[in-house]
Image 1: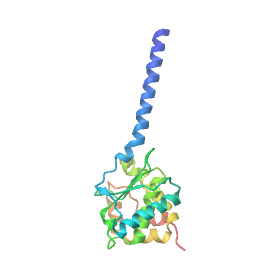
Image 2 (image 1 turned 180 degrees about the horizontal axis):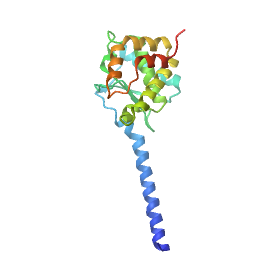
Image 3 (image 1 turned 180 degrees about the vertical axis):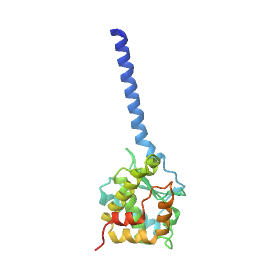
Image 4 (image 1 turned 45 degrees about the vertical axis):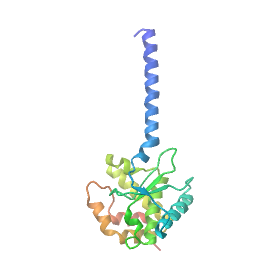
Length: 193
């Protein structure tokens, strides 16, 4: 290759490399947030909605996040889930059942929100990416349980897992769902005093 052709090749390669990096950066900035599908925002009318907002704000502060995540209600069967991307404070999508005090206790809400804050702090956004590696997603779940126990308590996390054991086992037994076995989640939440 002569000097003139080499110079042209170098410039084209350099421009292509920069374009690729920009595409990756834009994708990483927006894709996790755009991957969260939801029906509506969590309001502030009911006592349960207020609790979710208060807990999310308190735990976000305790976890060192700059601001509380946006809270949305999703009918996606994977909810609750969390996603965070550069330039965004994060989003937590909860299932409508979390708003029902007959299905989730106040402490259950604390445990769920703490777990999702754990995903945000760790930049997991795993629900968007987990189809690539279920083992990686399971590790992220256990790490979020450990984080949640540290920000709430071991007792709250153990009670949450026990209170929703049927759902946890259904997730564990579903080959498309990367949730770990409830016993592994209990262990990740620590030993209670």
